Length: 321
Image (cartoon, rainbow, N blue to C red):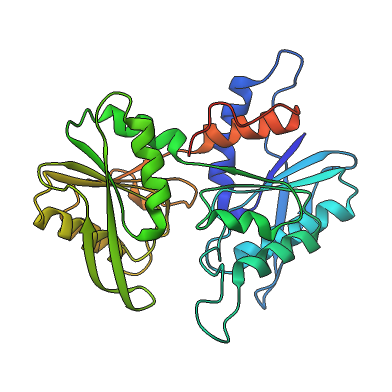
């Protein structure tokens, strides 16, 4: 097994290596991050190069494909380099799968970016994909190769339980998140009655929400909104304000991918949200010490998945939606 990281996810990969060495079997050598050099050119192009042999190896390449598009291109070039260097298998570990919101034609004459990204990865030579909290579960069907789809609930549910909130309710910020919210509520409902609240939103245009209505029992509840990502934070902050206006005692949020584009941080800090939890699938070193936004690491989850896949062990036990 050889593990490499592209430039955007190198810090995440180092944490994965640490966890792999904690769970390694006695006969296995210590895992280390392989040496991958990326040479930039003056016109903006770049060329990844393995400085060690990967012939016959199972190669794991870690990279989240958040903007800019260079991150996706760097992953594709690195996969191609591994295949041309005679790697036995190439497994792309993509904590955040970018372009996933373009999963259908929601209006005429638009691209389906998620399908195109899947085709590019397959054409580059990827044998398997590992990713977390896809924007839509059906994106797995865009691939004709195995997809290991893991969920941030593995780290968020213990996080919510540690808050010790009574009168807890789980909220979905839109109708598409109802399944996720229901699954969280079911997992947390063993210790208390955990309700589900659905927010129905209408958009003026992309990234601009015109109206949100909350459906469910809000009065006196400590509400945790669960979502797959926070981009501009417009939907999240508006939903939190609506829930507070309807009598919620407190509003928090757990969102897997903290894209946090534009003035998202300013919106969150000025909103009625008490706390926001995101994972480290997208690096945000500036959030260290932030008074409202907490970063929860997914590196141990991915280390466990990588170990089990490499050793042909089942990954489904212990993983919840």
